Image 1 (cartoon, chains in turn cyan, red):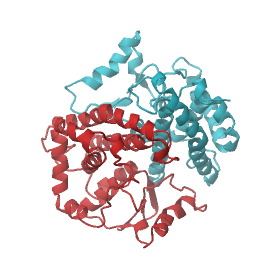
Image 2 (cartoon, helix red, strand yellow):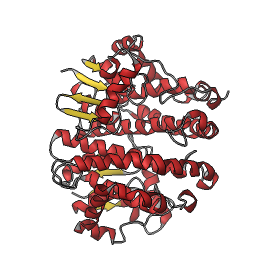
Image 3 (cartoon, chains in turn cyan, purple):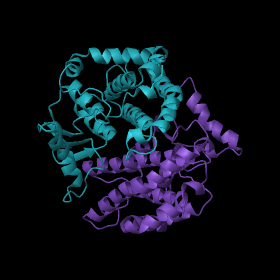
Length: 243
Length: 243
């Protein structure tokens, strides 16, 4: 089965957690909006679906995944659907819902990260909300990064299996998403997050273990992996990350 | 089976979508943090669980639901778990994931609503971020309410069954959550949203149909239903809702 994955072709954004899972699983998939050559034509692939008036159930926004007759939108929903099919979800009912809870908490974190550079509205340019962004980013680095990362550090520390993964003995999809969070924070806030990293040794160890997985390492070194940039969720603006 | 539901006892917040589902289903549940008499003791019920160092998997935040051995956190995750058990989820796999997608989109909307009065950080008082709140609330009313509500209007209009519900023939849990969104917007932005309501006739009709369901009507008229107030997600501040 080939999965058709749709997300903005020029950013990691909210969609990268799905790409990471598909890649680590070695799943066959098309990253459909990246198939045309021209950026405008690429974006148009997404817009055509969002605007298609014959769709009775268009997605609200990308990412979305088409698997035969089923279209699944929202990154956490896609991972919840896909995880068991590609061997990246835990087995028991309690663990499955816990994995999804962790993913939803990461979803919330990504929204908070986005709002560090768009605290007023995503419909205005960053340049028109810089002063508010400075305040929000400072509060995020000071209070929200510790709140979120201390939580994952605790979950990792408490895992009775001592596997170094969030749930049980084996890697599951939220581990890959937490990897992406660390990569993003390092890119966006090298000063603010750099100082704090040492407080989350299990989280950083997880990040390193993910990076060394052969399939993921291969993906990260490939052209399929998009570079972080100032169009995505994680953005590096020096004025939001003072020394 | 009696469900143990945990959420802040003094607000509707992110937890009310779960209370609405439990009530409409006529499910037996305890609203555990509302059982003590004193507000401090009520809140302590939640804090004790969040801070319990013997929990290997504490929730990140309320709401959470305890069902026997399983603890489920995050409102959308709770509804996804609970929906089929209490007769408020659709039947087919595609519909189940679509219901969850709608709920996750409502989750995002609630986070956007929260940030209209806390655009800088939830760790500071509203009074310390009023100027930024005015900007964010104006952008929310002008651009985000139409973006979200037009989507639900389209889903309702497109539903081939013509039932007036979001999915298929029958009410499902996202319908109840959309009701809560409308109630909240009417409370928080009577001017801003009042002017726009007429553009979403199917959404308003759904709101009215939910309010007339006997069990929900009984709940809404009871003391179990908390009034909207300026501690929750939806807050009415006149300066954020100019005429």
